[in-house]
Image (cartoon, rainbow, N blue to C red; front, side, top):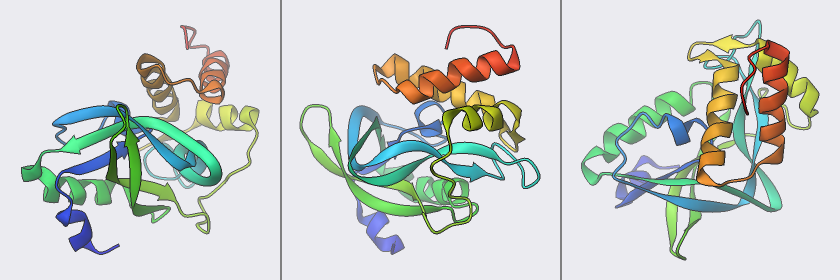
Length: 190
């Protein structure tokens, strides 16, 4: 994608569907519930930097393209004065290993408005793409992995908690949160 295209977007919206829900890392002037069509949230990316290492990879969520799918999350509006620094920050954070691809995609906001949003989707040809793993295997990996941004468990639990608080149901994520709590002996409600 050309940098100019992203910088021309005023306002700039960013789609948050996982850690951007609870840790955007950039200024947000407005947020709205939103739906991205044609993609689903999936633990389909091996994490070798943020939530795991090359020796012990973790798993992180990615937007995986699928016909008829939809992903519910947040549209995060960036203040106009912070667009350049936000895009630079997101590129450093999300494109660390080139497993994500930067896209401008139509996003349906609650209330009926459609905006163009910056989103990071999985590159299905990248070595870190690991779709199709069963939930028990995902839970085993998440329970054990730790990366530069902390334990993989923290990523899972924060994302599941924030989606639940937003009223977004994700049965697989809820099952994983409970199972990982069991595996780690962390207890609590998930």
